[in-house]
Image (cartoon, rainbow, N blue to C red; front, top):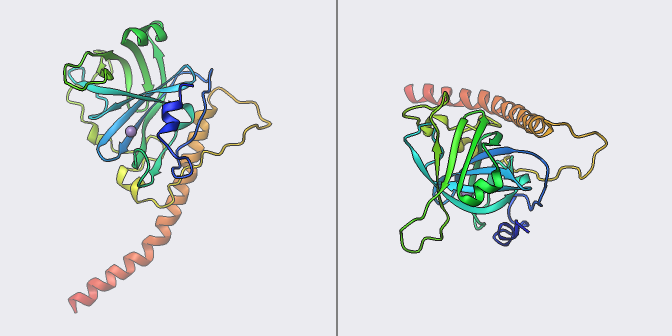
Amino acid sequence: MALEEYKRKRDFKQTPEPAGKVERGKGHRFVVQKHRASHLHYDFRLEMDGVLKSWAVPKGPSLDPADKRLAMQVEDHPVSYFDFEGIIPTGNYGAGTVMVWDLGTWAPEGDADAMLGKGDLKFRLDGEKLKGSFALVHIRARRPGSKGTEWLLIKHRDAYAQEGYDIDEYDYSALTKRSIDQIAADAGAEWTSGRPASTARTPKKNDWLADSIAKADAKKRKAAKATAAKKSPARKSSASNAVKKKS
Ligand code: MN
């Protein structure tokens, strides 16, 4: 139901993004994805009512309470989008590189549905990069053609506030530590949405985190192997080139 617009915009035979479904009762996770599409932006997503409520934040979130960041509400995304990191192929909706910039849990500071309906959602984040109290505030934009989807993402003053916060200093994945350029260059960055539909084991509370970490570790090992294999011959050849040039 809530994912119709998400599905309408995508051809799942052409994009590695998950088709997804509404998954209730999973909890309160959040993710921020750095998305280098036609314009670089950050996608801020809160798990709520079985989907990821989503806002595109052109300048990205900030820990500086003086920054009021424009956040355009976009279509709900499936919960399985949570750990999507990789490349959306050319010709598809949102084509470009996606990084899991931050992830963790969130807690509403009040009744989440009521606050969202009112357009004044107050919450705390417990992520790797983003922590503390924030607000998403629906604004009435005066610009012509406004769809009424404009919100502001604002950090509240608390122990986690950081004056002069510069998001560009944090260009690394919370899952794989790769920069956006490294993800873009990684030909082996395909993301697999296929998890076993049912498993014998009982799901535990932090399975999603363990899964993400396990995936990231496997990727890191693979990347480290590939780099090690590439590095030694490459270095030798450039060294011998340098010698050749000199002689
Ligand atoms: Mn996006």
